[in-house]
Amino acid sequence: MQSICPKCGQPTEQGLCLQCTQDATKLFQCPDQVEIVLCSICGARQIKGKWQIPDERSIEELASQAAVNSLWFHKDFAKPDIGLNLKKVGATRYLAEIEITGSFEGQEIAEHCDIPVRIKLVACDRCSRMAGKYFESTVQVRGNKTRDMTQKEIDLCKSIARSMADAGYRGGDQLSFIQEMKEVKGGLDIILGSTQLGRHMARAIYERFGGKFLETCKLVGKKNNRDVFRSTLLIRFPRLKKGDLVTFRGSIFEVTGYDAKMTSITSLREGRKSSLSEENAEVVEILGNKADAIKATVVAADTDVLEILDPETFKTGLAPRPKDLTVGPGAEVTVVRTVDGFIVLE
Image (cartoon, rainbow, N blue to C red):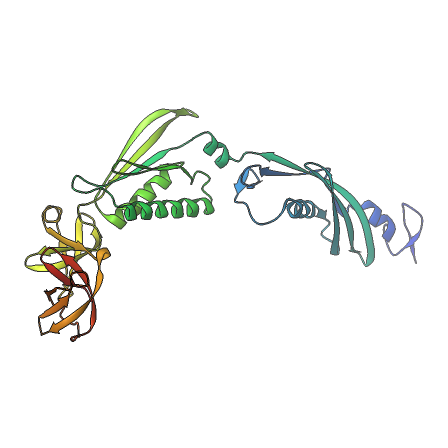
C-alpha cells in the first residue's frame, strides 16, 4: 500500500516525499559576506588571527578561493560542482556569483547564490613594527685591538644576517626582521626585531669567525604587566682569521676554524691538525693569508724545497715543499708572498 506525504499529500514510499524532503533539508549555505584581511604594505594575509607570509596569488584569486571555501554542504549532497564568476563592484569589494550543481537522494540539484567579498587592508604586525622602528636586540660585530674587520668579513656578516632573518620569517616568526644594518667604526651593527633572532644570529657569526661573545640586557619598560628587555649581543673577532698562515712550534699552519675558545689549525706540510689556545693565538706570528695567494712558476725542485719565480719581480726565492705535492720545473703553483719568501699552498 502506497503512503501519502503528510506535508503535500503526494504519493510516497514512506514519510515525506522527495520534493518535501529536499525543501525541508538545508543542502548548502552561503554566508552573507566574506572578508579577507590583507597587509597593505607586504601583502601578507591574516587567517584565524595569524598573519601568513604573502604568496603569488592575486587579490582576485584570493577572493575567489575565499568565496568557495566559505560554502557549506550537507553531508548527503553528492558530487557538488561549483561555478564562479567574480565581479569587481568597488575599490575593495567583489561579488562572487556562485552556480552549484550536484545530487541529493538521486535527484539532480542546481542552485545559485551571490557572496559579497570585502578586502580589508591594514598593516600587519611585522610592517607596523618596522614602520615604528621597533627592535628587541642589537648584534654588534667588532674587530679587536690589533685589527679591524675586513670588508669581506663585514659583507659575509650582512649575508648571514639577511639569510637568517628571511628564514625566520618564512618559518612563521613575524618579528624576524632587520630594522637596520649599518657599518660603524670598528665593525657592524645589526638591529633586529626579535631577541630570539639576535641570539641565533650572534651564535652563527661567533661559530663562523670565533672570538668572544657577550650578551647584556636592559629593562626598557613593561607590556601586559611583564618586563620588556632589549639585548645587546657583542661578538669581538679574534686576532687570527680563517686562512691566516702562522708559524707555531717550528712549522707553518693554516687557520681553519674555531672550536669554543680554541683556534683550529692545520700544518701545510704534513696536513697535521692541531689547536691554538687563546694565549698562543694572541702571540703567534702571522705570515700572510690564503686570500692573498697568487700563481707562480717552479724553477727548480728537490725533495724538501722549491725554487719559485716571483711573477712581479722575476727574482727567485725558496719555499718549503708540501709533503704530498708532486711538481717539477715549469709547473705552476699557488703561493703566498711573505717577508721571508714564499709559502706554497698547492
